[in-house]
Every structure is written in structure tokens, then in C-alpha cells.
Amino acid sequence: MDDPILAAIAVALSTRAAEGMADAGKTAFASLVRLVRRKAGDHSGLRTSIEAEPTSSTSDDRAVALRRALVDAAAQDPFFDQELRRRWEIFHQTTLRADTVTNTVSGRITGPVVQARDIFGGVNLAPPPQQRHEP
Image (cartoon, rainbow, N blue to C red):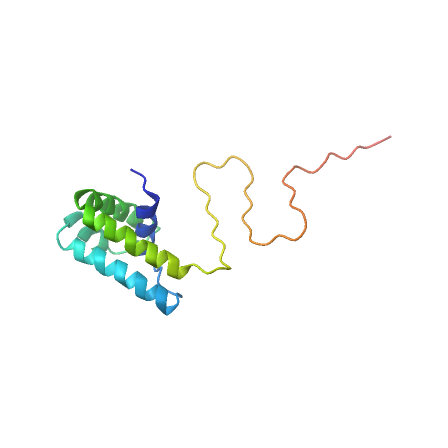
């Protein structure tokens, strides 16, 4: 099961997502963390994932393990699942600003991708035209 919300929560929990946030975002994130830590008290897989020390490799491994544990805990406890999603939505809304742009690219990309906010002028993704050389 590849639930994008649980994946986003796992990444936020496995990284230092709260750094640089405004106070409202930090408060909402702390509420989310408290809920997950409380659930970890009776879910050994979640507890193990949370307590795992970051390794020298990327935080991707930790996020994957945490996502799996969240999926399992949410499947076992519908109230936890519902409350987790509710608190994520609150956190997500407090960190969004009206002038913020969120670019997401997922899956296998086989061509050019442009991520931008404001573009003034054109964007051309075509290869440059071949120049003709006349004798």
C-alpha cells in the first residue's frame, strides 16, 4: 500500500521537518509527533522505527521503515488512522502560505521536467533547431 499521506508523514517524522517553521507549524507538528509516540507505546514496529538512530546512509531507509510501521498501525487502529490524518491536515495547512508553490514529481520520468513558480517569458523544451550549413 503506497499511501501518499502516510509516506509524507513518515518523511516529515524521519527528517527535521519542524526546523525553520513558524510557531503554528511547530505546534501542529508537535501534536502529530505526540500522537505517533503515544501509539508507539503499544505498537512495537512503530516504536522501533521511531527509536532508530539515523544511519550514515540517507534518511530514506528510515522513512521507508517508518512508513511501513505507520501503515500497519493505521490498519490495526482506525481511530489512530483517522486522528493521524486529521493532525497531518492541520499541520499541512499551517505550513502552507498563499504564495507557496509545491512541486511534486513522482514515478519514472522519461522526459524533461520544469518546476517553477513564476515564469516571465517563454519556456522551450524542444531541442535546438539544426542549423543549416550552405556551401
